[in-house]
Length: 279
Image 1 (cartoon, rainbow, N blue to C red):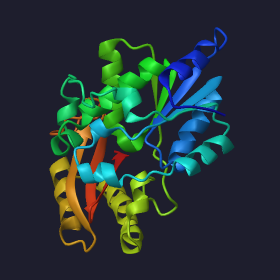
Image 2 (image 1 turned 30 degrees about the vertical axis):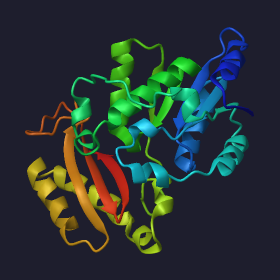
Image 3 (image 1 turned 90 degrees about the vertical axis):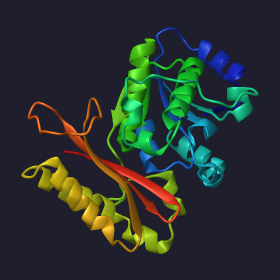
Image 4 (image 1 turned 135 degrees about the vertical axis):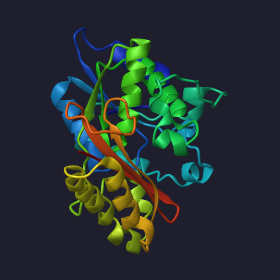
């Protein structure tokens, strides 16, 4: 496994690959878990070479404390990637990526950026678009792999690829869950013992909401979820939304020809957790 910290040396290595070599790319912010590794595994099956980036991107954090507290486990991450036969790891510094200008570009994602996460995390998706486009320019992958826990992010990246005509295929992979249903996330390591014990409640509520959506309208389901969280001893609900999977617009009247998804964000103390479920 080769490890690069500089863009120039990484690009020289990629340039040396034989013509026809396919590159699968998994961008991460580190603190890797089985969900990340499942992306690496799928990329290994579908490409000749797999590149993983580990970079905690400062421009996508709307909360300075969240950036400071984001878990960093680089030695463990590298050991895990080696055990999964990753070919190349790119671990740049902020200076290497942004030089002396750590700020986001402005993007137009055709309104996808104003829904759900966009309402609560100002500038977040401009930061996501900035770093993902930059990494695509550096790595030049044929396919890039993202987990569906960040489903809105996947749709945003797809929109950016479409609008900028970038030559990369975006592959979405199912949410990887703990045995008790909690969606795997690097932030889970910040949960207290009590918070972690209560965490399966989030997915259990989503599963019940899915059943209710079969017979009730969206507003009734949303009210039910809000009531479930109203007096919860551990979690504070930030939002629950039922939206069209394609446009991410909130559902008003159910259309049998469209696919819908429920999206949720909750706080456990200062730790913010998100999840979603196809309806």
